Image (cartoon, rainbow, N blue to C red; front, side, top):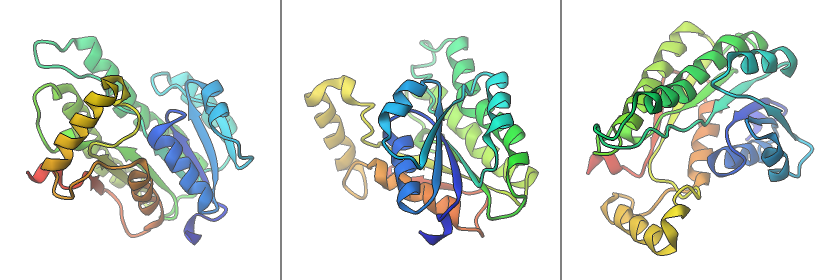
Length: 239
């Protein structure tokens, strides 16, 4: 993808799953990557590529974000893949769980935008890519906190697109993706769950991290798109 050749992209997230797939896709397109997160040891061990640097960022710590911004240099795109973990029914949710979810997935990316826009060219060739999620658009018992957080990210995407224009802001909203996050269910439980979701999904399968990486690259490179949340969920909310 020529539009990313020699571009510098920050990918904030874990050393595996979606964040790693995006980092590798950017490199395959000729871009340079800064992979950032809390665990720099895991990040460093995950990549064997001189075109992928590693840095520390804690999205819940403004000082961490400010420190990173002071030393990072120029950036073309910023991708935040932070996830929301406040799962449970209404009676099971706790205030601190919700605040932690919002802090990481909503306020963290907001502070990234505040401190990193000065490191970017002020035009539509630069962008932020945030991550919402399917439960912003499909209510489900047990995912109230996740849905609230993801819905807020969907609005943040549109609000920031106006606030920091002409720098573009878009989001990706994944459905059920085989990231490894479901491995705790055990092989049998995971297989049964994936079969259930696939059977009810219009495209008849579970998503892959490569599906999501392709969407993130599209969001970075389409310079006439801003304020949009790309729903990469196989059409699951429709049924």
